[in-house]
Image 1 (cartoon, rainbow, N blue to C red):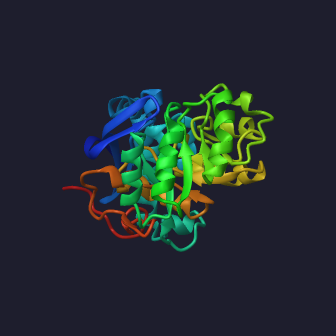
Image 2: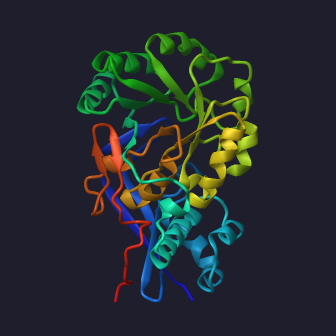
Length: 333
């Protein structure tokens, strides 16, 4: 028998982060602990904010299937018990973790992800005034890759300011559904001139068909438009890149299924994150080993991360060998 413990947590941020239509001031996460014979596996998820997922709602989802899970459940069977989203992602991570600790085989080995390495990640610059975004970009001077959050208004001025501050940087932009087909087309020449390398989720979910025939000179990435495996076929021919987020798709198990399918459909895989601590980033780092692009900088926005924390250095992230490794973790007494 497994024993599940559900723990809601709140993690304050250093300062607010603004994206199109939303401002984050703290991270609310749900931690799931799975214990068996004194060995403990842990997972974390913040849920999908635009689906109104939050720790209480995710906890209620877990409670509805608690008996089924505690009687013993595989990660594969979990995909049939819970829908894609944060609850399944947190529980899936905990099951991977306890499996590694019980078997002596790390998650990296089991996922065929190779030897853990530091991953080059983008560093996010939240939407703000052009001057403040330029200053934030300068503060990330050691990071060669930046992702700018845009809002659909005043974006060109923001981008010009950041490019002037960081002329050498790789820059991607994330509209978070804030543009329209006409506004995107109007921006494209300037985006190309300013050396933008990626445009993430330009249009709202449901309007993806408007991108047919655009022939963007800059790769387009799907975020909100692709939640899980079920959405991949609809993205083909529209997007060049798919941003996998574990909270969206339902965890590492689903993400590993998505990776080869994304490539088979002629797109490139990217891994991103919702708001999370190092515990939430850890399984995403496994996915990152197998992706072309990595955006795993969420813990940088926290006043304080878990210990041991992820290490961010020279534009890369390295997760501690804590989650998903075959060290013995005893349940709390």
